[in-house]
Image 1 (cartoon, rainbow, N blue to C red):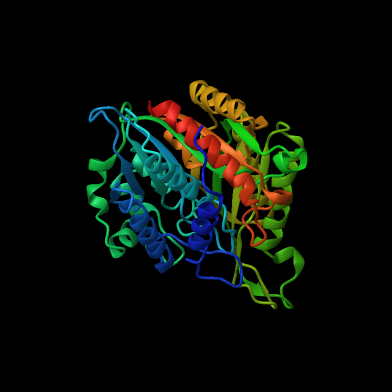
Image 2 (cartoon, one colour):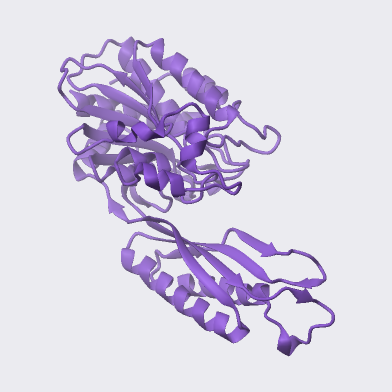
Length: 412
């Protein structure tokens, strides 16, 4: 069995974490930023030194290929995303990219002969921290997003993903020539931190993911009338924030009591206008994030929220709009790839737990075109998307050991 190098894993992860615009407040590496550029340069240098062919596709996905003995065999892919949330942690996404780099490094060092080529991928804009819905790189890669779609995805400054990619030196108009179709890739394995506390609390070093939740994200806009906070009687107000507060509580109620045990819903972002102490809020925009491993749970909560927005808006005399920001279906992962990961863990002697992922991942999007598996490593105290996010390097190495040997099985 192949074994990965703990210190090299540590070094590469720590190096990636230095490409960070908020070094005193977690890790922030947004798509098309200076930090993103430095991370791509680091990966390019690391992969070309191994003799790999490197391409950064028209939307910013990083792809590096280690050739196999067959020129026509489809590639076996591994990797994760390279972007972060604002003030996030250094392991989310980066752990999977570093694991993929380590796996291919070991295979190259040990001169393992494989029929299928291996490909490292570092997806762009998985988090949606810059452009909203997230999973943009993977959706573009499989053809879910067209060039026209990229023109419609806009950040808070009004700059489209298409324009930002062009400013970064890419050519998004060439996207169609890089889209992956069925048969182009044999399989994909993504290693990722769990981002929950199941593995950590059970002291299990490895998770084998069977399914990934679906995620539906909405943006709700309530428009009333801004007016003087002291001179406007309560019965003559059209207070958008008062209405929003009721709706936010309703979102939590729906997830707790109206759907399934696996359903969750969150309001995580809110903008109030004019946001002044002595002015009645005239407009509020807030996000709704709904997740479940069953699409019925997501759809039920969405429908209830839409009905309640209509009712509350009428009660307060408001105008409203609800837009769909992002939508990914729940997916089951490949039984074949799951079996390979399980068998590898058993051969190495690693205890594992079969589980679902409560977070969305690029892997879910790739199930449209190939067989997909996911490996989870524990998150200490279940903390993620925060500066305190942490995973032991020993657990990360265990995940890397299972990854590299699973890749060999799939690529032979």
